Amino acid sequence: MTADPAENVHGTKHIIQSLLVNLTISLAKLVGAMISGSGAMLAETLHSFADCANQLLLLLGVRRALKPADAEHPLGYGAALYFWSFMVALLLFLGGGMFSIYEGVHKWLAPEPVGDTKISLAILLFSVLLEGWSLLGNIGDLNARRGNTRFFKYLQQTKDSDLIVVFGENAAAVPGLLIAAAAMMLAAYTGDGRWDAAGSLGVGLVLVGVAVFLAVEVKSLLLGERADLAVEAAVHQAAGEDSAILQVLRVITVQKGPAEVLVACKLELRQDLDTAGVVATINAFERRLRQRRPEVRWSFVEPDDAD
Image (cartoon, rainbow, N blue to C red; front, top):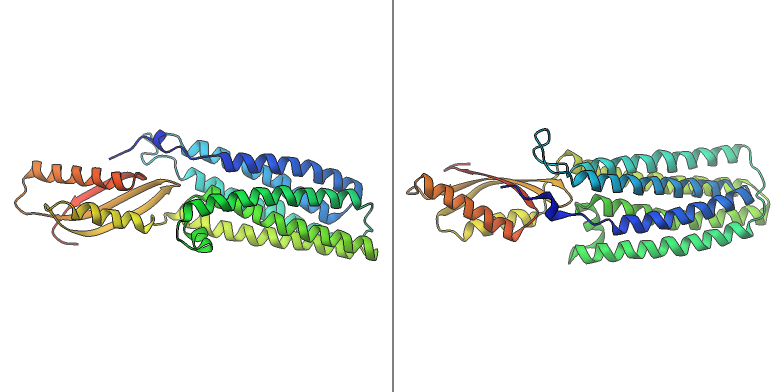
């Protein structure tokens, strides 16, 4: 049974919001970095521009994921969002994290005094407020979806890779901004440019840590992670409502996209059913399953008497 991909349009509001926030912050930080000559400020500027590119990649992933199934991809393109989410993690690691670490090492070996920091610190404070507002919005979205699941457990279990990537970016941005501000103030107060270098290193390490976490989580989805356990529970519930189904012998679920699930299962049916009865029983089972879990886009049911 196959559903229309248009029935499950994935929202992009949180991505666009983060894109606009990061674009504004990027331009402001660039001005601050040019005025102060701060390596930590430059690292934060690169971080924000990398985040803008990340959001564009996520928007591309959402658009690609909505393509309908075709002969070349009979199970659709839902996993495209996972691929582009993984690319975002790589960009965050290389374009943000590793370059910031390189900049920090370079500044440490050849420290330079920072210039006027007043404007840069004002920009960082402005950035903290914007990033904090965006982060609170992400947390609100996550809380609305996680139900009774603990927050950090939900981060590991959710199939909405784009939401997790945007949250990860914003969660890295706030401490990164605070590290950059502290480093800049210490460098200006002491006259020692190595504090600024340490700030760049700190920002880089934060970005690398978040990038690794995102890459690990998205990799699992790319490899074909099982769907939420509630889908398996729905299979058993749908089977239990028909006396013609004796038991569920086996269930396999695969997450094919943020809200696209494939289900394959074996059902033991009554022996007295004829061919028409078997077909009618399976079709009715699939309808009940999809009523409970609309994300089940494909279901393959095999009647059998043994696992």
